[in-house]
Amino acid sequence: MGLLDNKRHPILSGVLLLLILVGSYLIVAIPFKVMEVIPGFTDIRPVMLLQPIYGLFFGIIGCLASAISNLICDIVSDSLRWSSIGGFIANFLGPLVFYLFWTRISKKDFNIRNAKNLLIYCAVTLFSALVQTVIITPMVKLIYPDIQGTLFALSVMANNTLFPIFLGIPIIILLQEELGLHPKTKKERQ
Amino acid sequence: MGMNKLQANLCLLCVTLIWSTEVVIFACIPNDVLPFATTCITSLTGAVLLFLGFFKRIIAAFRQDGLKLVRDCLLLSVLDCSYNVMYIYGLDDFDVSTGAFTLSMTAVVLPVILLMKKENVDIKTWISAGLVLAGIMFALARNLFDISIPGLLLIFGGCIIRAVFIVRLNHYARKYDAIAIAFSYTLPVAFISFIIWVIIQPATFAAIPWNKEVIASLFIYSYFVVALAKSLNIFAQRRATPASATIIYSCEIIFSLIWGLTLPESLIDPAAPDAFTFIGVAFIVLGNMAQLADFSKLKRRKEAQNGTS
Image (cartoon, rainbow over all chains, first blue to last red; front, side, top):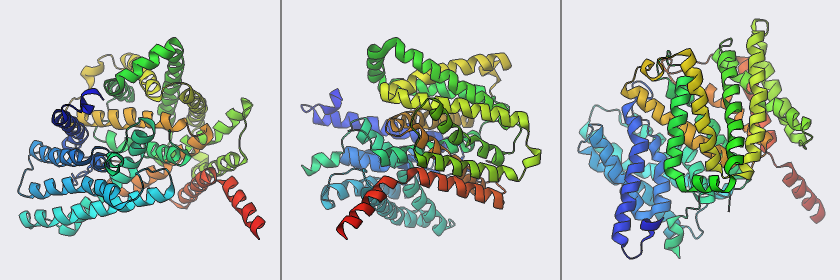
């Protein structure tokens, strides 16, 4: 990892990591902002699969990258409104839930090597999605009173649970088991 | 450490899910864009993305295995292109739902190929293959007398080639670096598709109606379906057997059916499943469960219980 592991310049390596994470997020997110995957329903966000990855493998920098990237996406897609503040907070807290659970609450190191750990991961994902829904939905409803609150909340919940589970799990397995990337949560616990 | 069996199966299931979304991603591409054009562009972009992300690893693999890796990956590319061409022309004779079922025939053909190679095939693999075959038969029963024989033969031929491809891929996945394989067999696929594309449509790139939706669709396909799914598939194949991988791939029909039932008509031909379809899907699910169930573990547990009592 070279410069990213530079102990003499931690701020420089942190900024570099942040830029790489923001860049990766945008590469995944922007094509989905451009095309309308399901007509009449624009908010399909597979990029949400990155939230657990950012929280577990990159800690606070990952959480920050998630929040900043989401804000940049709002700017790029011309949807920057006051509700983007809620989006920023939620997208910071989403990955943070994963990071906090495996550094402060769980007594075991993170891995998805058995059915029990798989279920725990799914439960944390569900909680993270719930936190984000509770933050974003009232703010959006406040700014756009015409929006259907329940439908919006359901779409946030669906994006933040389905993608981290169905696409996030295999990518986490790939990163951790085959590409040798260690969860940041393990280092923080030691 | 490497992924375990459960993780490999989860990854294979995810790969199948990603493959099934192909129709949704391609819905934004006009129908007059040839499949060879999309294969060429997405394979090339996918290979470039893999190289950008893992160039050190790929170069190291080439230094270590050199010509052997190139030769074996070239074989994979030729097999990949061959079965895809047969599927493309074979599927013209079927409606979407029936066609998708016939593609699952690979799960039935593969154990036979393994047996011909004098390799051991588990009893549960035969049971799974039998259940999948029953599922296909039920799905085809609806249109039994309208089935196009040339189309069916083309798809059957494609399934045989695909089965050979899976056996070879499984073998190479244990021999070479997974990312290097994904890169080295994707690049020739782009080249072969380009040759077919030039023959059918000499205008090639100029014939594509470039707009932001088309570019976004091609890019999403490149990184999700080509770069990610191919790499994930090869990594998982190292821990799975060709037979278990193929049975899991047959789940694609289940995902396709879900998309057909839930997504709007503008995106995908709506599924009109009847009792035959549901029974067919049920058999394929049973086939998957039979393959994934760890009977030896159950037997050991039973033996342990008998021992304690």
